[in-house]
Length: 374
Image 1: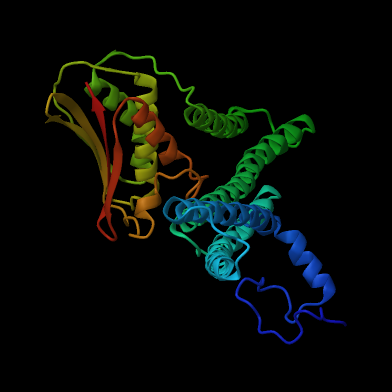
Image 2: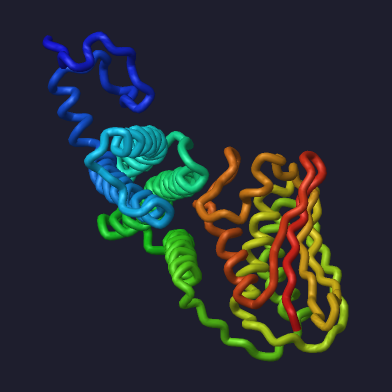
């Protein structure tokens, strides 16, 4: 292995890539040279600028000399020598300053170009060390933040595909097994068997609806069909659908409702939010527990709101998970499903101009509230 003769005895410079050996081989030097096009281009621009600046400076000095002493006698050495020394010193200072500035700026930018190429090829783990001038550091910081978000989104997307395939496979397998058994004469086509098939088709329908709602919300195409609604009656109807499930688990469903004027909302979407929150509460509330659903009125300036809440006495949410419960595809370690429900609820509430939040303490319970403006 032959090292490049120009660099064999030198100390490793700070701008040399960490993943390249030092002293460099000829092949390594060629790789680094090809990898740093920005440095070469900026170097050419700098030397052209330095030459023009030096020429302009000499012309300026000549004009000043001419203004005070007449045309300079360049045929005399005692006149030429001071000009030459002054010009050489200025040129040397300009080159040293420019090279240091260029090196501080070009190294991080070359690394940024290399990392951006990796991200473009699908490697979202690429990061760039924050160094150089403040502007370059800010650019590098923004790139690293973007790459991190892309990496998280890519991981969530991969996890989502795995979860979707799992969630779809289970009901499809049950439906297929039951239908094949009925066709082969193994199972009777009675009401109990058909009810099992119907329940699995409802699971599939909910999953498809959730994915469609999420897609519409994220694309900004979600449309609301507002109409005057009796909110108390809407909550009663939504909670009534869970009475059988709550009775089976011996959970008390409590309502805290008041008579208020009708509110202009999309009843189907608000019902969807309520059913999602109550369903989550039923999943985590222990036997002999309770779930309270209700609303209160509030006013902030000229804005009048209704605050709807669903509270339970379940195990609560860990403090590390609480800030992320409304993120799409986020699931705690003990969570079932795909992690879409609360994310969809957040989109639907915000589409009405409201906001949603969660309060929880481990061992005490959870309370999720959301506002709806009149």
